Image (cartoon, rainbow, N blue to C red; front, side):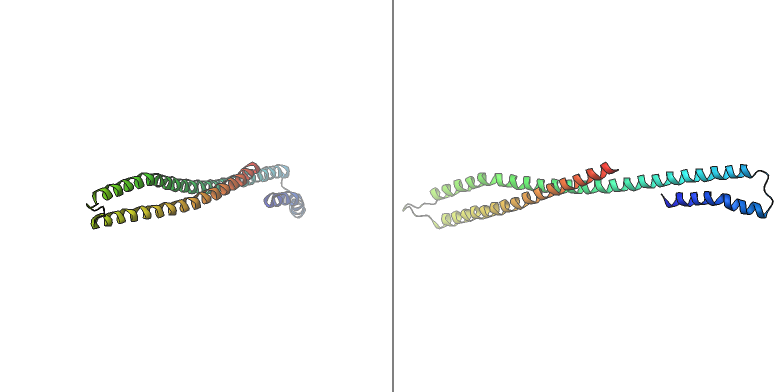
Length: 179
Protein backbone atom coordinates (compact mmCIF):
# COMPACT_ATOMS: atom_id res chain seq x y z
CA UNK A 1 0.00 0.00 0.00
CA UNK A 2 1.24 3.46 -0.85
CA UNK A 3 2.53 5.68 2.00
CA UNK A 4 0.06 8.46 1.26
CA UNK A 5 -2.89 6.10 1.33
CA UNK A 6 -1.61 4.56 4.57
CA UNK A 7 -1.40 8.01 6.16
CA UNK A 8 -4.91 8.93 5.08
CA UNK A 9 -6.30 5.63 6.37
CA UNK A 10 -4.49 6.11 9.68
CA UNK A 11 -6.07 9.54 10.02
CA UNK A 12 -9.47 8.05 9.21
CA UNK A 13 -8.99 5.33 11.81
CA UNK A 14 -7.76 7.69 14.51
CA UNK A 15 -10.30 10.39 13.74
CA UNK A 16 -13.21 8.74 15.58
CA UNK A 17 -11.02 8.12 18.62
CA UNK A 18 -9.78 11.71 18.60
CA UNK A 19 -13.30 13.02 18.16
CA UNK A 20 -14.42 10.82 20.99
CA UNK A 21 -11.72 12.27 23.27
CA UNK A 22 -12.59 15.77 22.13
CA UNK A 23 -16.26 15.04 22.64
CA UNK A 24 -15.64 13.85 26.15
CA UNK A 25 -13.64 16.98 26.97
CA UNK A 26 -15.92 19.55 25.33
CA UNK A 27 -19.49 19.97 24.47
CA UNK A 28 -20.38 17.78 21.54
CA UNK A 29 -21.26 19.67 18.37
CA UNK A 30 -24.83 19.51 17.32
CA UNK A 31 -24.18 17.96 13.99
CA UNK A 32 -21.17 15.69 14.66
CA UNK A 33 -22.33 13.05 12.21
CA UNK A 34 -22.59 15.60 9.37
CA UNK A 35 -19.11 16.95 10.14
CA UNK A 36 -17.67 13.43 10.11
CA UNK A 37 -19.39 12.70 6.80
CA UNK A 38 -17.97 15.87 5.24
CA UNK A 39 -14.52 15.05 6.59
CA UNK A 40 -14.71 11.48 5.31
CA UNK A 41 -15.79 12.75 1.87
CA UNK A 42 -12.96 15.27 1.81
CA UNK A 43 -10.41 12.61 2.78
CA UNK A 44 -11.75 10.24 0.12
CA UNK A 45 -11.46 13.00 -2.51
CA UNK A 46 -7.91 13.64 -1.30
CA UNK A 47 -7.06 9.95 -1.67
CA UNK A 48 -8.51 9.91 -5.20
CA UNK A 49 -6.57 13.07 -6.13
CA UNK A 50 -3.34 11.62 -4.72
CA UNK A 51 -3.85 8.37 -6.62
CA UNK A 52 -4.54 10.31 -9.82
CA UNK A 53 -1.44 12.42 -9.26
CA UNK A 54 0.65 9.31 -8.69
CA UNK A 55 -0.77 7.69 -11.85
CA UNK A 56 -0.05 10.86 -13.84
CA UNK A 57 3.53 11.02 -12.52
CA UNK A 58 4.02 7.35 -13.40
CA UNK A 59 2.67 7.97 -16.90
CA UNK A 60 4.97 10.99 -17.31
CA UNK A 61 7.93 8.95 -16.10
CA UNK A 62 7.08 6.16 -18.55
CA UNK A 63 6.76 8.73 -21.35
CA UNK A 64 10.23 10.10 -20.52
CA UNK A 65 11.65 6.59 -20.52
CA UNK A 66 10.04 5.84 -23.88
CA UNK A 67 11.50 9.09 -25.26
CA UNK A 68 14.96 8.05 -24.08
CA UNK A 69 14.50 4.61 -25.64
CA UNK A 70 13.46 6.19 -28.95
CA UNK A 71 16.52 8.45 -28.84
CA UNK A 72 18.76 5.43 -28.29
CA UNK A 73 17.18 3.63 -31.24
CA UNK A 74 17.58 6.70 -33.45
CA UNK A 75 21.27 6.91 -32.55
CA UNK A 76 21.78 3.25 -33.41
CA UNK A 77 19.92 3.59 -36.73
CA UNK A 78 21.89 6.72 -37.68
CA UNK A 79 25.16 4.96 -36.88
CA UNK A 80 24.14 2.00 -39.04
CA UNK A 81 23.13 4.34 -41.87
CA UNK A 82 26.47 6.16 -41.63
CA UNK A 83 28.40 2.89 -41.81
CA UNK A 84 26.30 1.70 -44.77
CA UNK A 85 26.94 5.01 -46.54
CA UNK A 86 30.71 4.66 -46.02
CA UNK A 87 30.58 1.13 -47.44
CA UNK A 88 28.66 2.38 -50.50
CA UNK A 89 31.23 5.16 -51.01
CA UNK A 90 34.07 2.63 -50.89
CA UNK A 91 32.27 0.32 -53.31
CA UNK A 92 31.71 3.21 -55.69
CA UNK A 93 35.39 4.20 -55.51
CA UNK A 94 36.40 0.55 -56.07
CA UNK A 95 34.21 0.39 -59.17
CA UNK A 96 36.24 3.18 -60.81
CA UNK A 97 39.55 1.36 -60.36
CA UNK A 98 39.32 -1.15 -63.27
CA UNK A 99 38.33 1.61 -65.70
CA UNK A 100 41.15 3.86 -64.49
CA UNK A 101 43.63 0.99 -64.69
CA UNK A 102 42.56 0.19 -68.26
CA UNK A 103 43.00 3.82 -69.27
CA UNK A 104 46.47 3.97 -67.75
CA UNK A 105 47.48 0.68 -69.41
CA UNK A 106 46.24 1.99 -72.76
CA UNK A 107 48.20 5.20 -72.20
CA UNK A 108 51.32 3.18 -71.37
CA UNK A 109 50.93 1.25 -74.64
CA UNK A 110 50.46 4.50 -76.57
CA UNK A 111 53.57 6.08 -74.99
CA UNK A 112 55.57 2.89 -75.64
CA UNK A 113 54.62 2.90 -79.30
CA UNK A 114 55.30 6.61 -79.73
CA UNK A 115 58.42 6.63 -77.60
CA UNK A 116 60.35 3.96 -79.48
CA UNK A 117 63.31 5.18 -81.35
CA UNK A 118 64.32 3.82 -84.74
CA UNK A 119 66.52 1.33 -82.93
CA UNK A 120 63.56 0.03 -80.92
CA UNK A 121 64.72 1.43 -77.58
CA UNK A 122 62.49 3.61 -75.44
CA UNK A 123 63.41 7.24 -75.43
CA UNK A 124 64.07 8.93 -72.09
CA UNK A 125 60.87 10.96 -72.00
CA UNK A 126 58.78 7.83 -72.75
CA UNK A 127 60.52 5.83 -70.04
CA UNK A 128 59.83 8.63 -67.50
CA UNK A 129 56.15 8.82 -68.48
CA UNK A 130 55.71 5.05 -68.37
CA UNK A 131 57.37 4.83 -64.95
CA UNK A 132 55.11 7.63 -63.74
CA UNK A 133 51.98 5.83 -64.98
CA UNK A 134 53.12 2.51 -63.54
CA UNK A 135 53.67 4.28 -60.23
CA UNK A 136 50.12 5.66 -60.42
CA UNK A 137 48.79 2.17 -61.12
CA UNK A 138 50.70 0.85 -58.11
CA UNK A 139 49.45 3.67 -55.89
CA UNK A 140 45.88 3.07 -57.01
CA UNK A 141 46.27 -0.64 -56.32
CA UNK A 142 47.51 0.18 -52.79
CA UNK A 143 44.60 2.59 -52.35
CA UNK A 144 42.11 -0.09 -53.40
CA UNK A 145 43.75 -2.58 -51.04
CA UNK A 146 43.45 -0.05 -48.21
CA UNK A 147 39.82 0.65 -49.12
CA UNK A 148 39.00 -3.07 -49.14
CA UNK A 149 40.53 -3.44 -45.67
CA UNK A 150 38.54 -0.45 -44.44
CA UNK A 151 35.40 -1.89 -46.04
CA UNK A 152 35.95 -5.19 -44.26
CA UNK A 153 36.29 -3.38 -40.92
CA UNK A 154 33.17 -1.33 -41.65
CA UNK A 155 31.20 -4.48 -42.53
CA UNK A 156 32.27 -6.00 -39.21
CA UNK A 157 31.22 -2.81 -37.41
CA UNK A 158 27.91 -2.87 -39.27
CA UNK A 159 27.22 -6.46 -38.22
CA UNK A 160 28.09 -5.62 -34.60
CA UNK A 161 25.84 -2.54 -34.64
CA UNK A 162 22.98 -4.54 -36.11
CA UNK A 163 23.38 -7.14 -33.34
CA UNK A 164 23.38 -4.36 -30.72
CA UNK A 165 20.31 -2.81 -32.30
CA UNK A 166 18.50 -6.14 -32.26
CA UNK A 167 19.39 -6.59 -28.58
CA UNK A 168 18.19 -3.07 -27.70
CA UNK A 169 14.96 -3.63 -29.62
CA UNK A 170 14.34 -6.90 -27.75
CA UNK A 171 14.92 -5.20 -24.39
CA UNK A 172 12.61 -2.35 -25.36
CA UNK A 173 9.92 -4.76 -26.53
CA UNK A 174 10.02 -6.56 -23.17
CA UNK A 175 9.94 -3.26 -21.31
CA UNK A 176 7.04 -1.89 -23.39
CA UNK A 177 5.10 -5.11 -22.85
CA UNK A 178 5.52 -4.69 -19.10
CA UNK A 179 3.98 -1.19 -19.11
